[in-house]
Length: 355
Length: 222
Image (cartoon, rainbow over all chains, first blue to last red; front, side, top):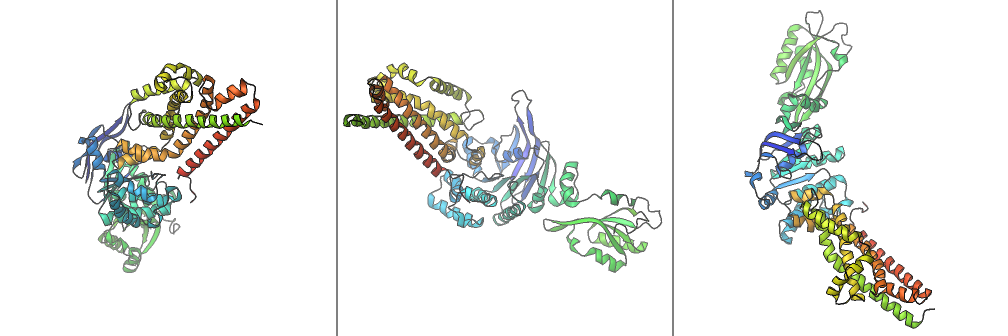
């Protein structure tokens, strides 16, 4: 649906400073119907990247294709027409204060020259869709942040776009409202088959609704792929810094001190990390281990969460029991499609302290 | 007390002043408003960036704005004669008043339009709006409260200027004040003129404030 090829954006030098490169050699392929997230710290170039998709920012180099059309080759009038099929929502909503909710949603249709009766037929169902049918005659100043963003979403959908661009749409909202708006976007994505591209600096947003994600740093895409994979196997330090707070991969120092790499030390129970990334991860594995293999699993550390409805996370457990029973337990875990990694052995004497 | 004759003069002068202010204000808005919008949208980094146009028009506006009004009135007498056929009287006074109103209104409108949140322009561009549509559907409606206040300010200034044209035979309240109050030593006429001017300004300002409040949908109670 959207293809960026070798897109580069450089702002010319101004007022003594040198030229600024906001994006360098960025390529992206976004499939129809997917929710694609772009995450990065502030200044990473997210905003510029998103704006090249509807050519609010003209790339210095490279091509931008949306729905098969090379936007960079269009005339100004053709580009305006192409923009009717790309909706956009904003962090600060950008609603017209002088227009009512209805008037705001009707605006893109007025701009496109749609007759009044037809505008009504489009706007009213949209207000229903975003749950604001009763606020039709209100002005933006009378609405809460979440309601304003709902108006923004209805407005973006008015011209029946194929693509929705979301510029930090939830960053100005409280956590509860953020969740509601994200669910609304996911719902629209499912119901209308709309392709959504969103930028954010919050990993929680990516985790909540995105199918695929690109990590942007210093104007480059440094990593991209299905959200689950990025969470499970983050490659770059920047990605890790986003993902780690959510999945808690690292052991705290106090626990690390109780680990030894050598298995030769007598009495050292193996400490393993179970990574939940599979469909069967919902099985009650820890209690199954105890019952079936007659071993004790002492949980040291861990966090289990859900990404895209699939359980995801890690548990670090110390296994106490006969050597062959432990071997069997590890094999059983692998059979369940869980990641199993032996981190080392518990230092004897510190035994059970962690429990 | 004022004699009936003086009262009749006062009424006539008030109507003359209103006439001059209304016509020059309307003409000034007709030309100044589009000019102000053009100044706002042709600035650097704006919707229809055209730095050279902006500099030239801006310079002309500045020259007109920095010329003291009383000098402007005298300086453009040939032009006034050309347009009004005469250089004295109410009709003639409208010409310099309009010439002074245009750049004043242009700057006021420019400021109001520049105040509109850039995000709204971006949103409209993302919807595929043409620059003209952005001006008509976004910039002007959003700037309307500020424009209403600006035009009120212009109207109040024009009431003041119109009193000044009295000094060069322009007619209206200023003329009455100078000829009767000052030259004929009738302080009560001077006082009456000032009172009428104060009342006029008061009415115009209140009407403008009311209009701006009505247009402004930004601070409604939730």
